[in-house]
Amino acid sequence: MKVENIAYACVTRFVESGEGNREALHWVDTDLTESSYSFEYFDREASRVATILRQLGVTQGDTVSIFIPRSPILISVFFGIQKALGISCILFGTLGEEGLLDRLSNSNAKVVITRKSLLRKILAIKDKLPALQKILTIDHDDHQSDTVLSLKKLMAETKAVFDYPHMVDGETPAFLQYTSGSTGKPKGALHAHGALEDMRQSFRDIMQLEAEDLYWCTADPAWITGIVYGVLAPFGTGTRQVQYSGTYNADNWLKILENLKVNIWYTAPTALRMLMQEDENKFSQYDFSSLKRMYSVGEPLNPEIYHWGKKVFKVEIYDTWWQSETGSMMIGNHPPMMVKPGSMGKPRAGVEALICDDDMRIQPDGKQGLLCLRKGWGSMFRNYFRNEAAYAEKFNGDIYITGDLAWRDEEGYFWYVSRADDVINTAGHLVGPFEVESALLEIEEIVDVAVIGADDPILHKRIIAFVKLRNDQPWTKELELKCRIYVSNKVSTTAIPAEFHVIDSVPKNQSGKILRRVLKAIYEGKDPGDTSTME
Amino acid sequence: MNIEERLSKVFATVFDNDSIEITPELTADDVDEWDSLSHINLMIAIELEFGIEFDQSEIQNFANVGELMASIEEKLAKKN
Image (cartoon, rainbow over all chains, first blue to last red; front, side, top):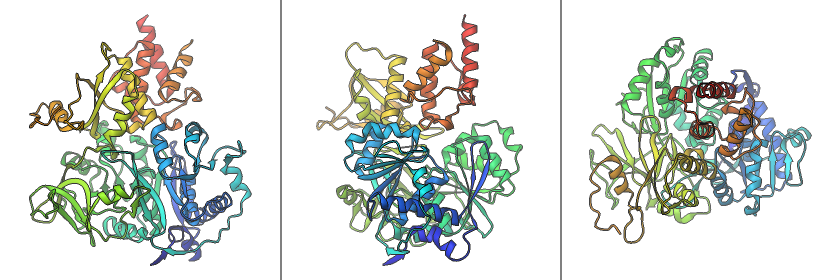
């Protein structure tokens, strides 16, 4: 089925309909300087990017990675890739060498767009990336070599005209979103142009913005929420929106809410928990009367934070649940639903959510099991890029297995319990224990390691590493720092263990699999249960 | 080595980047890898390098490198 190209639906069509001068994005820098960008601006800049990519040999289905911090240029580049029918892959600047290599390698990135300060990371691994042909930097004035080119210079030399098909097959790949599993390397959930309509519909159904409402999604576009509900859905629906260039900053955030009169705010429980740590008097200095509703995503919104947020901001907070793979909100709370604090809410229209046991039998209300979704919604991921086996493992017939445990009450509300696997959800980022363990095992003082997640009052889960040291090797603060820095620079800052515990041996079963439940039980001071299979 | 040079060495190690220019105005927003999680690494590394300790509120409230350097100088002066 033919659908609108994402770039056409999100920017070009506004220009064609005479709304090109309308503000698409109100941008706030970390010093609170504001600037305004129109749909016409993004359409023009995206055409330049698409022309450049085409000249560099990017054709349909080629991957172009975006490795720059959130910024208007990131959005222009994203739409430029869509116009050129490439596959965009936005990556966090905090990724370490191995984390970056895994993603650039699996995605077969042909071009990477980055900036001076991040260039060294790409150059360090370039020899291991045979598909990589060009690196474009956004802040060099001149080309650095035949391979490292200045996007800034190229943009200045390129006309803002690019002829591209406004209608494409709905299955045309559009972007990749990497996510971690309990084993193996990160997997790239592949989304298609045809997913946009479902993303927009979910945005309308759940956020329910009125024409003049100002919307703010705090998520980074390298995160699925940031690209879907910070770029695609608001651009695709012509929503007035603000974005802030920095990360969490309580004072700046509160000033933005007040000064810009934000109406609908989509943020994360970790951010709310961090705000909760601030001096309570801080909040009374601001006027949040423009705020109509808040929404939350990333981890469960526990009742404590829900009640705190409601008291401070004086509006309802609606939790939502979805994943990189689902492409849009699947289960959520929204007006006029009554919110049950701590609940995920109900499946949105068109989504069938089920609770199944390990044999995929549907469970009755009140019984905990695997949270599953029946295939068929429009924004479902089309594959794990170059990893069909992992994709197949996520399905049982037409049932998608989310990897979360939950239960449903008799009124149809779903309640999150935990992950069903070993993946650790820390501050909304999924971290696979395997990635952290692999990095730690490269440290010469460590001979064995196991990683688990434990409850954390701010991050939802924090990463705990159990390490077995070489004979007579003492555990010191210097060694802890070495481990922390190594994981940060090798994998990602989000993978840094919050705690290290030295153990004599890592509990494993007879086939060598780490018995994480035993470590979890020991850590929590509980009975480890049946250990008969332990080595 | 003076404080600034030692701090520059710490930043290079923690963020695996020797091109970071240490200035009083430098903030986490200027360094790609500097977020709330790697900030803890930075604080531990500074404590070890200078033989000082920061309390929790200090760790969370340094607005920029200038404030960080002032705190290091103050702690070193007290120590001596």
